[in-house]
Image 1 (cartoon, rainbow, N blue to C red):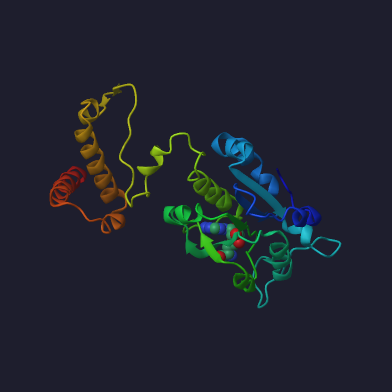
Image 2: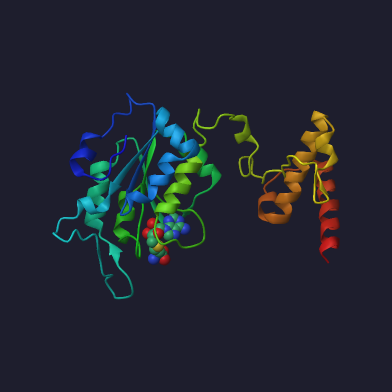
Length: 267
Ligand code: SAH
Protein backbone atom coordinates (compact mmCIF):
# COMPACT_ATOMS: atom_id res chain seq x y z
CA UNK A 1 0.00 0.00 0.00
CA UNK A 2 1.63 3.26 -1.16
CA UNK A 3 0.37 6.73 -0.54
CA UNK A 4 2.27 9.43 -2.33
CA UNK A 5 1.48 12.74 -0.81
CA UNK A 6 -2.03 13.69 -1.87
CA UNK A 7 -3.83 15.40 0.99
CA UNK A 8 -7.19 13.58 0.82
CA UNK A 9 -5.41 10.25 0.59
CA UNK A 10 -3.20 11.05 3.54
CA UNK A 11 -6.14 12.00 5.72
CA UNK A 12 -8.18 9.01 4.65
CA UNK A 13 -5.27 6.78 5.57
CA UNK A 14 -4.70 8.13 9.06
CA UNK A 15 -4.31 4.78 10.73
CA UNK A 16 -5.79 3.26 13.82
CA UNK A 17 -2.86 1.44 15.40
CA UNK A 18 -5.15 -0.64 17.62
CA UNK A 19 -6.22 -2.55 14.52
CA UNK A 20 -2.87 -2.68 12.73
CA UNK A 21 0.15 -4.74 13.71
CA UNK A 22 2.45 -3.59 10.91
CA UNK A 23 5.27 -1.24 11.81
CA UNK A 24 4.49 1.95 9.94
CA UNK A 25 7.08 4.25 8.38
CA UNK A 26 5.86 7.62 7.12
CA UNK A 27 8.30 9.69 5.11
CA UNK A 28 7.84 13.37 4.26
CA UNK A 29 9.99 14.28 1.29
CA UNK A 30 10.29 16.31 -1.90
CA UNK A 31 11.51 13.22 -3.77
CA UNK A 32 9.32 10.19 -3.04
CA UNK A 33 10.56 8.43 -6.20
CA UNK A 34 13.97 7.99 -4.52
CA UNK A 35 12.34 5.25 -2.43
CA UNK A 36 11.24 3.16 -5.44
CA UNK A 37 14.18 0.76 -5.30
CA UNK A 38 14.08 0.36 -1.54
CA UNK A 39 10.41 -0.61 -1.71
CA UNK A 40 11.00 -3.46 -4.12
CA UNK A 41 14.28 -5.07 -3.25
CA UNK A 42 15.39 -7.74 -0.86
CA UNK A 43 14.29 -8.12 2.75
CA UNK A 44 12.48 -4.80 3.03
CA UNK A 45 10.56 -5.44 -0.20
CA UNK A 46 9.48 -8.78 1.22
CA UNK A 47 8.54 -7.27 4.60
CA UNK A 48 6.35 -4.75 2.76
CA UNK A 49 4.72 -7.48 0.72
CA UNK A 50 3.97 -9.66 3.73
CA UNK A 51 2.63 -6.67 5.67
CA UNK A 52 5.16 -6.70 8.54
CA UNK A 53 6.08 -3.17 7.50
CA UNK A 54 4.22 -0.31 5.80
CA UNK A 55 5.91 2.60 4.05
CA UNK A 56 3.87 5.71 3.29
CA UNK A 57 5.42 8.52 1.27
CA UNK A 58 4.15 12.09 1.40
CA UNK A 59 5.34 14.96 -0.76
CA UNK A 60 5.91 18.36 0.92
CA UNK A 61 4.84 19.95 -2.35
CA UNK A 62 1.29 18.65 -1.98
CA UNK A 63 0.98 21.05 0.96
CA UNK A 64 2.17 24.14 -0.90
CA UNK A 65 -0.55 26.74 -1.28
CA UNK A 66 0.60 29.01 -4.13
CA UNK A 67 0.39 28.23 -7.82
CA UNK A 68 4.15 27.65 -8.07
CA UNK A 69 3.95 25.05 -5.28
CA UNK A 70 6.68 26.85 -3.34
CA UNK A 71 8.05 25.00 -0.31
CA UNK A 72 11.14 27.07 0.46
CA UNK A 73 12.29 30.67 0.81
CA UNK A 74 15.43 32.75 1.39
CA UNK A 75 16.93 32.78 4.90
CA UNK A 76 16.38 35.85 7.09
CA UNK A 77 19.72 37.52 7.74
CA UNK A 78 20.95 36.60 4.28
CA UNK A 79 23.25 33.82 3.13
CA UNK A 80 23.27 31.12 0.51
CA UNK A 81 20.50 28.66 -0.24
CA UNK A 82 16.87 28.22 0.62
CA UNK A 83 15.11 27.12 3.79
CA UNK A 84 12.03 24.88 3.96
CA UNK A 85 9.08 26.93 5.15
CA UNK A 86 7.70 26.09 8.62
CA UNK A 87 4.04 26.53 7.66
CA UNK A 88 4.27 23.99 4.83
CA UNK A 89 6.27 21.52 6.91
CA UNK A 90 4.09 21.67 10.01
CA UNK A 91 0.83 21.52 8.01
CA UNK A 92 2.06 18.42 6.22
CA UNK A 93 3.20 16.81 9.47
CA UNK A 94 -0.15 17.50 11.15
CA UNK A 95 -2.06 16.04 8.21
CA UNK A 96 -0.13 12.84 7.70
CA UNK A 97 1.53 11.76 10.96
CA UNK A 98 -0.34 8.88 12.59
CA UNK A 99 -1.19 9.58 16.23
CA UNK A 100 1.12 6.93 17.75
CA UNK A 101 4.02 7.64 15.42
CA UNK A 102 7.21 9.29 16.69
CA UNK A 103 8.22 12.25 14.55
CA UNK A 104 11.91 12.54 13.64
CA UNK A 105 13.42 15.49 11.83
CA UNK A 106 16.59 14.57 9.91
CA UNK A 107 19.47 17.00 10.25
CA UNK A 108 23.27 16.81 10.41
CA UNK A 109 22.86 18.99 13.51
CA UNK A 110 20.75 16.38 15.34
CA UNK A 111 21.37 13.76 18.04
CA UNK A 112 23.41 10.87 16.69
CA UNK A 113 21.41 7.84 15.49
CA UNK A 114 22.99 4.55 16.67
CA UNK A 115 22.11 0.85 16.87
CA UNK A 116 20.68 1.56 20.33
CA UNK A 117 18.32 4.12 18.77
CA UNK A 118 17.27 1.56 16.14
CA UNK A 119 16.55 -1.01 18.87
CA UNK A 120 14.45 1.49 20.86
CA UNK A 121 12.49 2.66 17.82
CA UNK A 122 11.82 -0.91 16.62
CA UNK A 123 9.60 -1.32 19.69
CA UNK A 124 7.34 1.59 18.68
CA UNK A 125 4.22 1.45 16.49
CA UNK A 126 5.82 3.60 13.82
CA UNK A 127 8.05 6.54 13.00
CA UNK A 128 7.56 9.60 10.79
CA UNK A 129 10.74 10.85 9.10
CA UNK A 130 11.03 14.45 7.89
CA UNK A 131 13.53 14.78 5.03
CA UNK A 132 15.03 18.20 4.39
CA UNK A 133 16.63 19.55 1.21
CA UNK A 134 18.60 22.70 0.34
CA UNK A 135 19.70 24.45 3.58
CA UNK A 136 17.29 22.39 5.68
CA UNK A 137 14.31 23.36 7.84
CA UNK A 138 13.25 26.61 9.48
CA UNK A 139 14.43 26.21 13.12
CA UNK A 140 10.91 26.65 14.46
CA UNK A 141 9.94 23.23 13.09
CA UNK A 142 12.09 21.63 15.84
CA UNK A 143 9.37 22.43 18.39
CA UNK A 144 6.86 20.38 16.42
CA UNK A 145 8.78 17.09 16.28
CA UNK A 146 9.73 14.53 18.93
CA UNK A 147 13.41 14.38 18.01
CA UNK A 148 16.06 15.86 15.69
CA UNK A 149 18.43 13.13 14.49
CA UNK A 150 21.65 12.85 12.45
CA UNK A 151 22.97 9.62 10.93
CA UNK A 152 26.59 10.76 11.18
CA UNK A 153 29.05 13.63 11.11
CA UNK A 154 28.81 14.35 7.40
CA UNK A 155 26.41 16.34 5.22
CA UNK A 156 24.08 14.82 2.62
CA UNK A 157 22.14 16.73 -0.02
CA UNK A 158 18.86 15.62 1.49
CA UNK A 159 17.28 13.53 4.24
CA UNK A 160 16.16 10.71 1.94
CA UNK A 161 19.31 8.59 2.18
CA UNK A 162 19.34 9.14 5.95
CA UNK A 163 15.68 8.06 6.12
CA UNK A 164 16.48 4.91 4.12
CA UNK A 165 19.36 4.04 6.46
CA UNK A 166 17.05 4.42 9.46
CA UNK A 167 14.22 2.47 7.82
CA UNK A 168 16.52 -0.41 7.00
CA UNK A 169 18.18 -0.58 10.39
CA UNK A 170 14.85 -0.44 12.27
CA UNK A 171 12.96 -2.79 9.93
CA UNK A 172 15.56 -5.57 10.14
CA UNK A 173 15.02 -5.73 13.91
CA UNK A 174 11.29 -6.42 13.58
CA UNK A 175 10.22 -10.03 14.14
CA UNK A 176 9.95 -11.90 10.84
CA UNK A 177 11.97 -9.52 8.66
CA UNK A 178 15.25 -11.45 8.87
CA UNK A 179 14.96 -15.20 8.38
CA UNK A 180 17.45 -16.13 11.10
CA UNK A 181 16.96 -13.64 13.91
CA UNK A 182 19.81 -15.30 15.86
CA UNK A 183 22.18 -13.54 13.47
CA UNK A 184 21.04 -10.20 14.88
CA UNK A 185 22.42 -10.84 18.34
CA UNK A 186 26.09 -11.04 17.47
CA UNK A 187 26.25 -8.18 15.03
CA UNK A 188 28.42 -5.11 15.26
CA UNK A 189 27.16 -2.58 17.84
CA UNK A 190 24.41 -4.86 19.16
CA UNK A 191 26.45 -5.61 22.30
CA UNK A 192 28.67 -2.53 22.17
CA UNK A 193 31.46 -4.20 20.17
CA UNK A 194 32.19 -4.60 16.47
CA UNK A 195 31.46 -8.05 15.10
CA UNK A 196 34.22 -10.69 14.99
CA UNK A 197 35.68 -11.45 11.53
CA UNK A 198 33.74 -13.98 9.42
CA UNK A 199 35.14 -16.49 6.92
CA UNK A 200 33.72 -18.84 4.29
CA UNK A 201 35.14 -21.10 1.56
CA UNK A 202 37.82 -21.43 0.25
CA UNK A 203 39.96 -22.30 3.28
CA UNK A 204 43.00 -20.88 1.52
CA UNK A 205 42.43 -17.66 -0.43
CA UNK A 206 45.63 -16.56 -2.18
CA UNK A 207 47.68 -17.76 0.78
CA UNK A 208 45.41 -16.24 3.45
CA UNK A 209 44.09 -19.11 5.54
CA UNK A 210 40.98 -19.39 7.68
CA UNK A 211 42.01 -19.21 11.39
CA UNK A 212 42.43 -22.77 12.74
CA UNK A 213 40.16 -22.12 15.77
CA UNK A 214 37.17 -21.88 13.41
CA UNK A 215 37.96 -25.29 11.90
CA UNK A 216 38.29 -27.00 15.28
CA UNK A 217 34.60 -27.91 15.60
CA UNK A 218 35.01 -27.06 19.30
CA UNK A 219 32.15 -24.71 20.24
CA UNK A 220 33.69 -23.19 23.38
CA UNK A 221 36.96 -22.58 21.58
CA UNK A 222 35.17 -20.94 18.64
CA UNK A 223 33.11 -18.75 20.98
CA UNK A 224 36.21 -17.62 22.88
CA UNK A 225 38.10 -16.92 19.64
CA UNK A 226 35.20 -14.85 18.28
CA UNK A 227 34.76 -12.87 21.49
CA UNK A 228 38.45 -12.03 21.66
CA UNK A 229 38.63 -11.12 17.96
CA UNK A 230 35.63 -8.82 18.45
CA UNK A 231 37.51 -7.16 21.33
CA UNK A 232 40.71 -6.83 19.30
CA UNK A 233 38.99 -5.47 16.21
CA UNK A 234 37.05 -2.95 18.30
CA UNK A 235 40.21 -1.90 20.16
CA UNK A 236 42.04 -1.34 16.88
CA UNK A 237 39.30 0.36 14.87
CA UNK A 238 37.05 1.97 17.47
CA UNK A 239 39.02 2.20 20.73
CA UNK A 240 36.47 4.54 22.28
CA UNK A 241 33.93 1.68 22.30
CA UNK A 242 36.16 -0.70 24.28
CA UNK A 243 36.42 1.63 27.23
CA UNK A 244 32.79 0.93 27.97
CA UNK A 245 33.37 -2.79 28.20
CA UNK A 246 34.01 -4.73 31.36
CA UNK A 247 36.63 -7.26 30.42
CA UNK A 248 37.53 -10.39 32.36
CA UNK A 249 41.11 -10.29 33.72
CA UNK A 250 42.13 -13.00 31.23
CA UNK A 251 40.59 -11.21 28.24
CA UNK A 252 42.15 -7.91 29.33
CA UNK A 253 45.61 -9.52 29.54
CA UNK A 254 45.13 -11.22 26.17
CA UNK A 255 44.00 -7.95 24.58
CA UNK A 256 46.96 -5.99 26.00
CA UNK A 257 49.38 -8.57 24.60
CA UNK A 258 47.68 -8.62 21.18
CA UNK A 259 47.65 -4.84 20.95
CA UNK A 260 51.38 -4.77 21.77
CA UNK A 261 52.01 -7.30 18.97
CA UNK A 262 49.94 -5.37 16.47
CA UNK A 263 51.68 -2.12 17.42
CA UNK A 264 55.07 -3.77 16.99
CA UNK A 265 53.96 -5.04 13.57
CA UNK A 266 52.93 -1.62 12.35
CA UNK A 267 56.06 0.16 13.61
N1 SAH B 1 22.52 23.54 6.24
C1 SAH B 1 22.34 22.33 6.97
C2 SAH B 1 22.52 21.11 6.08
C3 SAH B 1 21.39 20.89 5.12
S1 SAH B 1 21.60 19.43 4.23
C4 SAH B 1 23.37 22.28 8.10
O1 SAH B 1 24.50 22.69 7.88
O2 SAH B 1 23.05 21.76 9.19
C5 SAH B 1 19.97 19.18 3.61
C6 SAH B 1 19.15 18.13 4.35
O3 SAH B 1 19.81 16.87 4.24
C7 SAH B 1 18.95 18.35 5.82
O4 SAH B 1 17.84 19.18 6.07
C8 SAH B 1 18.70 16.94 6.34
O5 SAH B 1 17.35 16.55 6.24
C9 SAH B 1 19.52 16.09 5.38
N2 SAH B 1 20.80 15.66 5.97
C10 SAH B 1 22.05 16.04 5.56
N3 SAH B 1 23.00 15.45 6.29
C11 SAH B 1 22.37 14.65 7.19
C12 SAH B 1 22.81 13.79 8.22
N4 SAH B 1 24.10 13.61 8.51
N5 SAH B 1 21.87 13.13 8.96
C13 SAH B 1 20.55 13.30 8.70
N6 SAH B 1 20.07 14.12 7.72
C14 SAH B 1 20.96 14.78 6.98
